[in-house]
Image (cartoon, rainbow, N blue to C red; front, side, top):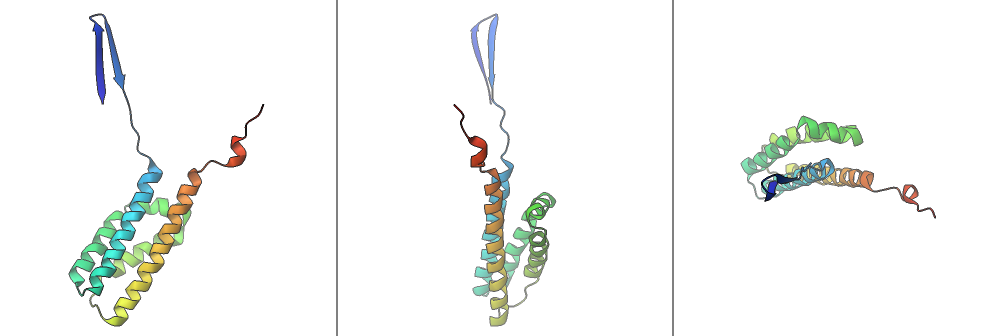
Length: 137
């Protein structure tokens, strides 16, 4: 956003603000969206709506951009690989049998816990170390 303040013809002031996105906030929000989509896969599978469950699995897949996968892999390489494989598996779910539902429930629960932990780790990396902010008189 740019604003002009014209006090007189020869004195023009220009006010501007340049915003940058907070990469950590974007990363954590994407992980939250991933959890929502995984939960919707499970919910729709439980309601015997396989096509909608697959649709949410596809949405989860679209959230796994190369940039997000690299960021996840920085903290937890195994999680990045497991997420990729899980999303592919969820896109190919073809029944809502009791055994399939139990398997998907365990998979989604496990991934949600790991995604939550990855979010916590990322946020903790932003917290200032109390030793570095000591005041001296």
